[in-house]
Image (cartoon, rainbow, N blue to C red; front, side):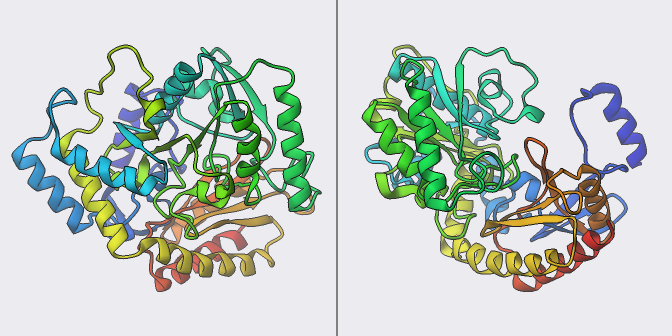
Length: 427
């Protein structure tokens, strides 16, 4: 059955629509932190639909909210008052840390970042954007144009002029040998030098932890130091929280809060986990920025009632059960467990991350050269052992991406770590 579905997939879908595994997997249902395939095999899910199943598979509170809302009305568009949308916007605005915040809902993180770029360029009347090397911001034409990761940037054509800044990757590149303070100083000096060679850009867009790029991040405080430079010139700061938001990093509710010394971002984008699988994205910005558009703009499907009901139920569950605290506690244990394993596996260059957002970078032993074949081997062996993980990485890197639902238990973390240990030792 799976082979037949794979053949049909190949016949009607694009070649570039990638699938994991030599024998692709069809997931039929899930519960908690586990999913099942068509053959009845059970897997511990350490990737959560690319960080999207944030709380748990088939979470009763979310499925009930979706079913009840669907029984009333599924959709009416933003042209009509929408109580669930207003209620979720109120909660997101309050949680955002942005003063006088306004919220606009979209259907994805790509669309959220696209909207943020529209707002920033319109507000600043500039089409120049600062972005980070190794970054990823989505697959729309404008988002691809600012993505600093060649593996996810299929064209150099863009409506934007993009200038790339150092700092998103701590342990590679020309400043990797510096200590954290000197690393930040060098990146700030690079930013200042770059700004001296161009007209003032509209904004800097940055992921506090680079997701697709392999869960890399700068030292705490880098973006606060950047913000001081940007603020002097009126340049906006957009924090792409599509993967880091909602407490996944454990230490903070938003990734930008590790860089909060100079205040919150001007714009925050979010998506993925808030819907727990439902299609929700959004933008939070100060009112003066959000209201700067001088033409009509709506969203047909952004903020639709059934997705907003899911978001409200999911956010309530996350806050009431302190899943941020759970991510900090269980994620910390998982990182330490994986680091102890890594010390005995020559292919592992680094285990990094925060909370339940963990990267395991693989290289050819004794070198800094990427080992994509080793990453593929571990992916397959982990699946054979009953564990699903992801892959990523930027320029010349290969990284296993680990991001389970944030309700992960200690026992499940230990189980997953044991399976991953066996998979790593099989390289």
